[in-house]
Amino acid sequence: MDYAIERRAPRTQSQGVEPGYAHTAQRWPAQPLARRPHTAAELSGPAGLSRRLAPARGDLAGYGDKRAIGQLILVRARVVDEDGAPVPGAVVEVWHCNAAGKYIHPNDSNDAPADPNFYGAARVTAGDGGLVQLRTIKPGAYPVPDSGGWWRPPHIHFSVWGRVWLSRLVTQMFFQDEPLNEHDAILNAIREPEARSRCIARLAPTSTGPADALVYDYQLVVRGRRAAPAMP
Amino acid sequence: MTRLVPTGEMTLGPFFPREFAQGANDLTSVDGKPAPGERIEITGRVTQADGRALDNVVLEIWQAGADGRYDNPDFFGWGRAATDAGGIYLFKTVRPQGAQGRRAHVNFLVLYSGLMRQLQTVMFFEESDDPVLSSVEKSRRHLLVAKKAGPHAYRFDIRLRGDGETPFFDD
Image 1 (cartoon, chains in turn green, blue):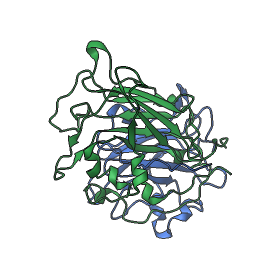
Image 2: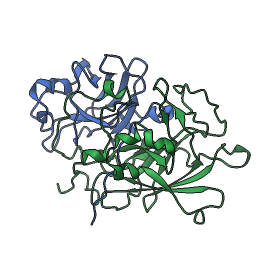
Image 3: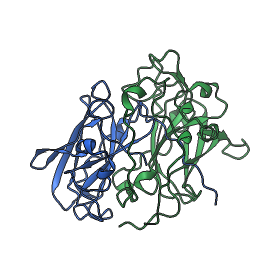
Image 4: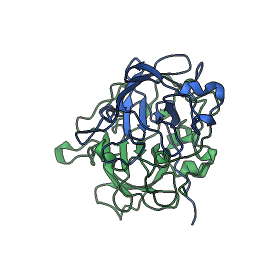
């Protein structure tokens, strides 16, 4: 099989146990991870994922008197492979908290108000250029309970399917020039500065986008090179 | 051509939307049509180092169908489940067949708050000479073999860390 998933440089990926994040020491394996040969099972993937995961919302901001509170933003995220080739049809899940730092989730104990016009979860499919556009509001920062003063900077969660099983990517997108980025245990678990910097979305010139929204450009690089193999 | 570096993985966090975690754990039909093969249930408990069962762990699977293929139009081999408050997950699926040098198996991916990257593991139905199972040290291979829990039911517990830690793979 000539399709291959190559190993990644460890410093471009999050470390498993992170001193500033107590749960990691309970949850990351103590034993070394095994290396395995890659076969059709790892180098194939669920084409047509929408048969099991239906699209859900593409716009989290709303309009008029149903508009969510907060700074309106448009995130233009491109899903590409390691060759830079777009991955059209990639399914992308997105979730984030509201402008006050509150998630629509029963486990969020943060004492911040919900926004009746904001429901922070979307599932969309990348278009021809691998492009996903998300119209939403900029999420707020929030404190992590019992963490000794750790605040999460504004961030958007992404869950992405690439071409094969091993291309699966779950990550978070950060915003340029946020002071909390410097101290975040999750962003800084990526040790290589360049790799970390690529997890931060850039503000596009305000002359280029819609008049009422700030535009952030972002790139999601999923594992794998060249076109997908034919399935066995 | 310059090679781009894959985006750094980060934790799923504690607030993965419930609506995304639910509703995709039944692989026994596609577009309302029943999939061919022996219907089975796979269930298990996910625990952390101190033995505590974990709530709302997201598990995704990818498997071949009863004919060993990954592109069978009558079977879609991807599913997702989340654990309940007791740490228990459930998949309804069909028993895969081994093919192309592999024994029957189900690929598992684990996503959770406090897991900085996805964890990959594999469930087997029996100890065998499968090349992926053989890449795990011999004394731990039994941890990847599901226990029979009924005529068509299998139990596959996942221990993230500690005694009886599940073997995981780094790709």
